[in-house]
Length: 431
Image (cartoon, rainbow, N blue to C red; front, side):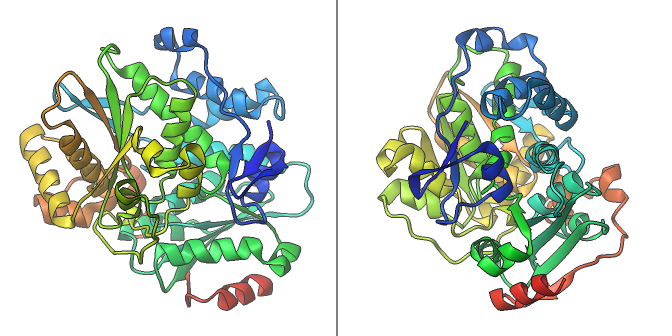
């Protein structure tokens, strides 16, 4: 399959180029030339598939014949080795727990798949591959874990100083070896801008073989479509219309859901639930896309004022009216987020992280007064990754899972850096 740039449909490259280069020279994003449909028989017999088998059925339609079927199966079997269970809150409401991977966040699915795919594509190269990635929290830790100690690949993570949770920061700054963390004096949008500038800089591209592990890389989005389909497999009553409520920041996660829908998943629609960074909900209401300055919130992984994946969403739909037929957008304050966390704990004895709480708020608003529909809320991270917010809001101190206990007192290793591309460029050239 070929992949084209959202800025130029005639600019087409191979799978390997799309994944390894990440970003076209014209600063668009790569999209598959077609979205392959899954057969009706697949959905009719979906109960007989495992999560990894679902992943294989989707992945092979994008990666084969560039990769062999046995290579694709090895990637999916190795990457998708943990569950994404559904927990029922009430007759209409289901929580899709995406935090059972090694770094306790939904990005483990995409990062593990991508690292294994890139390692395979990189195996015959003599020059080291450098992954540049911006993170608002969970991407950095998932990518660091997925690429840790992989031969021929180094990872450089840019994250906003003071704007990720302490445990998120520990996850991405304590590994060492081939993982380097750059602590940028700015926001996630600043980190993302610096990464994009690096990809477009000729001198850096002469010095490095650069690639990205953000959701700008199509190899992150394809595997994230897997768990939308697996959630459908887990629904007991598939005759009732169902919707996904997606806590949204850079909108890679929701875009992956759109890919699943275009492949044939019979989902009725999506709820884009954001915190105060409401660029996309505003676009859906007004038709005007206006990037904003990032606002810091307690759901920090969603603190994105200029979502990259708007380019892919716009490529799918061309207008806010067409997009609005599949997606409704809502925005919520920190106060509303905390109240939803409290209500859910008191009424359902379930501890939400602040991002999942935003997703549940979106579902509650959308479903009010509607009968005979089901909502699947994506719970994107384990609540203890945001233990300060959880403790302050619920007045409980949940026990840390073993993966977080192991790094709680580990020594942070990062390079503090000004929010200036020339500073980053000089640092990279001097390595």
